[in-house]
Image 1 (cartoon, rainbow, N blue to C red):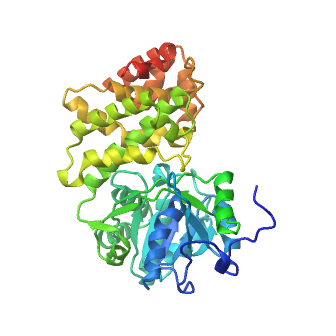
Image 2: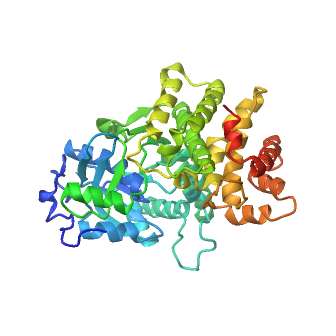
Image 3: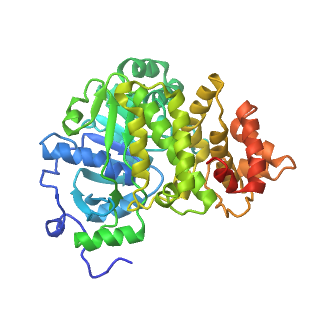
Length: 463
């Protein structure tokens, strides 16, 4: 628990913080960035880049908005938007940075609309996860009420900006979604068509939705991590986050983004190879470690990836992926994959297998299925990927696996998966819900059947 006698981080106490970097720039200007979904990742990634721009004298204050929860607002408002980012690497002391890039933190659709329509807003970034791109996140909106889905809010905001003669901001998603900018653009255009065909035509012509590839491991902070940071900082910080040292941001180059390059954002003409490298060689293996770790009884990613059996299995998954990745040599895919495995082994992060394994129905279509399709096209085996998928289905669907004690994972398809698993043909039905009537679905069902009798031995058999 936090020591109640310790002062809380805010604008009055920040000068007493024991941190390597404190915000020494003007925080009174109008925010030029609006961010939807200001959670742990945005604090340790976007806000750090903004912090560095502000130190250079470049306007980069952020107006943060959470659509569905007041938690971030409750954490950050009493701290005047200040929070700590702690770099956590094995064998070295914490390195603390107090970030002052967040000008305000608000909640709800009205706050989001205000941020999106503010004349000073030049860039809108989003971390709303793979599920947040639906245009109908909460069903039918009550008459007269603001929409709560992000695409609908953006379309409404752009309609108001167009009518007011305001130039549109750039919209840049920061989620692990292939062609995330294009996906958001499509969803926004769909919503705009329902408002006004002329609005949709204007958005298609005038609004830019660059795709981004972002990379930094930022686990949800635990009470123990917050207490450790507070001990080092000398102040209580309820919004602090811990992260690895590594961070990168690769973004499609469009007009208006040049200042980001000052802080290390890599602006490129084509992000697709970078997207594939990250999704196939970092996110995919991350999921493989998580599910194999759950099967073997490991709580954390770091303990799982240092298990020799799991390390060998995941190394084979990486080799199978590299065989079909077809990435440019300049992107050094093998070295990138090796570095990802090294990063997974960082015990200071405390990433849990259950956390990484959650929401598999949203993640695996991006991380796993394109590799499966590439291997099938080359008449190459997909058994290791089928095992990864089978472990996920067993955990999300509540299928008993001997000796594993798999937790029931959170997943958008959880109800459908558990209903399918309860049918007489449960394993086949489970696989069909996830993967349709594909050849891969049949392979996954067969592996699921073996999993229910063999448990962890399926991993051992891969050695």
